[in-house]
Image (cartoon, rainbow, N blue to C red; front, side):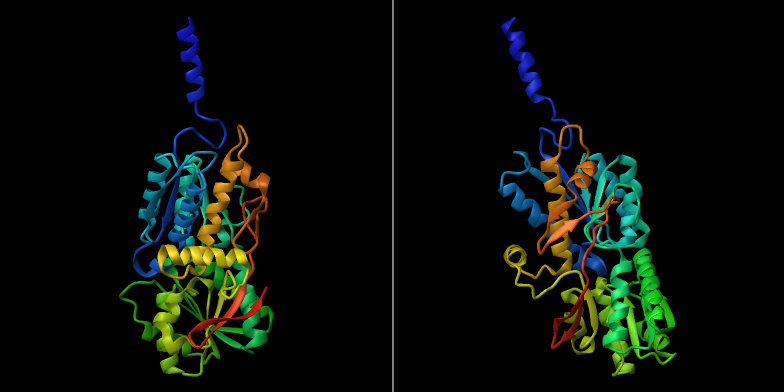
Length: 371
């Protein structure tokens, strides 16, 4: 009889915990483009996720549970992204961190929704995922906020009147969202969008022809909605053909790679950012130093956003109440501590983030205006 009672007690102790947690190691997944032309974005984002997980494990994990991180490269390919999402969901991850681009986020969400797995986007800001009661969350504002503020900066501070836009259809959901929002805001401010030129990012793209097409209508500014590598290559062609042309990019291109590859051709380019690179905030400095010591390079915006997004998930898992899903926990808590300030979610899992307008001066991103 005593043995039966003891066995029953042991069985109860070994039962999985209800709600967000469970007794065995807790799994999280990451999906991002860590190879190819968008690798600078994906690698930094992945490293931000790794740093957050390592720090949490060093502090004892989640309520005593260690965290296991499963990493997937989506290669900026739809089929690969879907397959990665299914593999992670099958493995029992509590959440998927990523992807890094909007086009891949749309693919991942179609799979993760079927499995009931929450996806915490990192730098996917397409409007297509805004305002939906779904399992996709993100710590950044959608493109409508950042693009409109870039338009205002070009009109007010650069006196731009005629703008040509070049955009990458490889990340169609993001680039078309951003282009539409920018165009609408710029025209409301009295500016004119004189041309829109699209391309599909690849090693075979002829940037000379694209630049030539963009300059045909004699714009005073060219805005590039592209990754850092393509934006740098386009800048070289544009500035070779028209040395005085004002250049600007979307946030997507705002990594160190843009300056490394663009050199003198990207000087005075307007680049919106998701954070203040020169911040003296103690939280930011501590994060920057920890990231740099761990990986040997600056985190940029992908590393910082990846770190914030992961900590939101980890904090929510730790605070999860009995019978509560991860989604319910995030919406209940609502406000989380980020590297440089609060991350606050609305009822649809979208957060409001600032836009920092920078210009490249002497090979550095220099802060212009904060919104």
